[in-house]
Every structure is written in structure tokens, then in C-alpha cells.
Length: 230
Ligand code: DC
Image 1 (cartoon, rainbow, N blue to C red):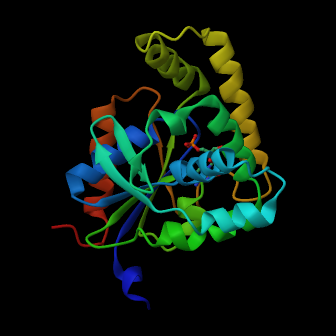
Image 2: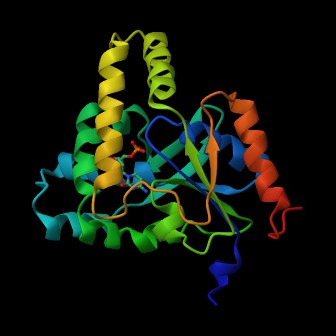
Image 3: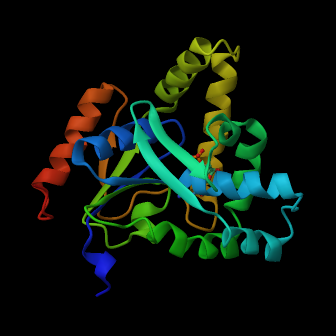
């Protein structure tokens, strides 16, 4: 067994807008663990590709790009902060252009393979909270605690609508609802690493739970598991 395999991992997978980022950051802070935002890994590849003019069908150069990413993550109260090559990217990773490119890049099997070791390298003591779509099914298949964080499309659209309104952006609820539904279908039905719960995942449906309740439920799952948390 490699040394890192003894480091506990909590995987939090689930569809877009279920609150994985905020929940992962809060849980990581409470446990004092490291955090991996794997969505930001795919977004970073997309960002670097757009910056360097690498086309989405240039698989060889995309795979090469994956080897050059120097990424780090830190948990904050409003989510996980990502740093790429020493620069905090924040909103640059969240743009629509990067989002669209990242979902295309994430559907390429050789890119997913090239990012496996990078993602696994975040498994460092005392533990890791890994947020994504395939954390429990592929990247950390041996994780001792796996959560699939879900919420109804209606509720996810309602939360996103509220967030955007607070930022002063005007998008209709119906548009958000339809976009989320379409994205869910694409993520669930894609052939590589579809967004599905691992067989041994605990499903946490946050539709009628507060953020505090979700965090408390997940922390209790970790503390009840045989992995050692002081
Ligand atoms: O969660 P997000 O929106 O930041 O993810 C960006 C894209 O990356 C999205 O299209 C889903 C994809 N993704 C993935 O395929 N596998 C992961 N483990 C995380 C994200």
C-alpha cells in the first residue's frame, strides 16, 4: 500500500448546483483537512487552453497542458479558493466561456486519465475532502466515506437564482431550471465518468436542509466511520 493510501478521504460528488463547493470547504475547515475542487482542475485546463489558443480537438496538446498545471486549493467560508501557477483565479475560472470549454475538455478520456495522478497528489495528511463528479467512483474509489450530495432541480435553480440576483445578474428562473436539467442529463449520460453515486455512497438530499444541517450530517458520517478523526 502506498503511503498516501492510508490518508483518509471524504468524497463529495453530485450534480451541478447542489452546494458541493461550499459544503466541502466548510467540512474541510471543521476537520482541518485539505481540499480538492476537481471542477476547478477541469476549469484550469480549459482556462489555460483558451489562454494559449489550444483547440478542443487538439488532444495531444491538451494532455500536455495537464502536465503543466501547478494548482493549489484552500478552503474559505464561501467555497474553495483555487490558485493556478501562483495566481488566484477566482472569477476567471467561473466565466461561461471557461465553463463550456471545461465540460468539453472533461469529456475527453485521455484528459481525464492525464489528470488522475494530479488529483490523487492532493491526498496528503491529515486527510482530504474531494469535491467533484467521479471522486468516489474513479479517482478515490477506495475512499472510506463517500457522499453523493443531491437536491431537486427546482431547489438548485432557486438557490442559483438567488445567488445571481445578489450579484446583480439578471437571469430568469426558467432559464436556470432548463439549463440545469440539460446539464444534469449530459453529465449523467456521458460515457466517461458519468455523475452517478458510487455503490457505497451515502445519498444526502439537501433539498429541504440548511447548509449547517448538511455540514453536520456529513461530519457525523466521517466521525462514525472507522477512519480515525481525533
Ligand atoms: O463543478 P464545476 O462546474 O466546476 O465543473 C466544471 C466541469 O468539469 C463540468 O462540466 C463538470 C466537469 N467535472 C468532471 O467532469 N469531473 C469532475 N470530477 C469535476 C468536474
